Image 1: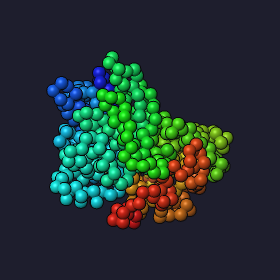
Image 2 (image 1 turned 135 degrees about the vertical axis):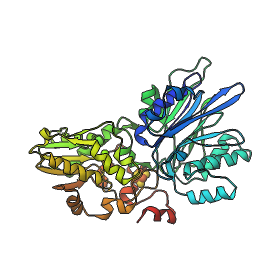
Image 3 (image 1 turned 45 degrees about the vertical axis):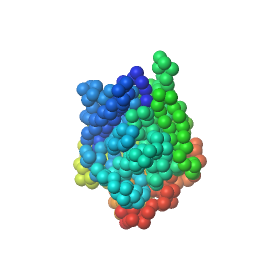
Image 4 (image 1 turned 45 degrees about the horizontal axis):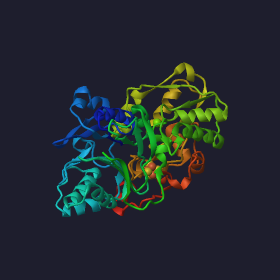
Length: 468
Ligand code: SF4
Ligand code: MG
């Protein structure tokens, strides 16, 4: 999912949030929503608009005009827990003694069963099936018991286990936080100059590409276990838990985040180029042309071509108006999606030996169709190289890599996969190669979907939902 939060008096925060969400559209395409508070002399008025669909389908000038205020949070959803339905669209809203709470969540809690039981025991009437709503209720519970926003949120966050990057609107300010391992990203940006009366304006966003589009300057990442409070007083930082070992999702680096985003000073475009270079060193291919699967495989394909000194070309044209095929909730929708999405160029491919680079191989359904299309277009040999290691384990922290029985590399050997997807050869980047290509420490990443080493323990019943 994509999350965004802003505190900016004298600005049109709904429109800024809309543009921020537009830049975060790739993180979730099922639903979009914005909640605002308008701080007036008569108190803080709450406004909300959310619906199924893309940011550009959900919002227009009229709906944005009905979201006045000085603070906002926004969300683009990609479902991991809770079905793809309007009731689960975010921001999730609950009421409290101090007013409404609107919460935008990226990630996935692993202790939902425990949390649900304790909330139900406290007589909370849960409206939805999402973990996100439970976090909002946990905050409301503490607020209703007399705590202030910061204290209430801190206590609630300590009850949550798993991955959560959050932007939460309250009548008085925006709360932003990351779980103690910082699995999902969340960055702070600063908007232009101070207001006339000296107030600074801050935003938080899942990725730096959202700061670029609204003209904010990158300040830093939110620290794991840190609570950031954006309000009249500017930005205040609190710590609700001692920092644990950082475990940013490495899948964000190789695939999920946009290539024009920067993670801990590292450009993801450059990182993906280096992944491709490393791949060419580890697993060369004797071919005439290097192709990338648009769009996610392209930086690595360019890197591969550079290191292998084999020309890079475009052999597949993507219909830019079709969403990410992977992110659609059902397999049959995904299968219908891919045929609409990529069309091979016969004149480029005819009679050529090619290597096609993709960032990851998850289920193998995309690859099978791509390879078949390349052969039908006349490619003489089709080799495939993947700029990440085999995905052998499901993710429990907010990326929908499916159950283990759907993961092709968990079920089949490289030779079996070659036959299944119909390539002349297949090779993956090594785990060491993936880590070597970053400028960061390997142990600061979660890479559990490649290794099975989960940094946050998965309770037994939850394991059974996906490890089969
Ligand atoms: Fe990311 Fe994989 Fe870890 Fe999930 S298991 S957080 S996808 S690295
Ligand atoms: Mg892709």
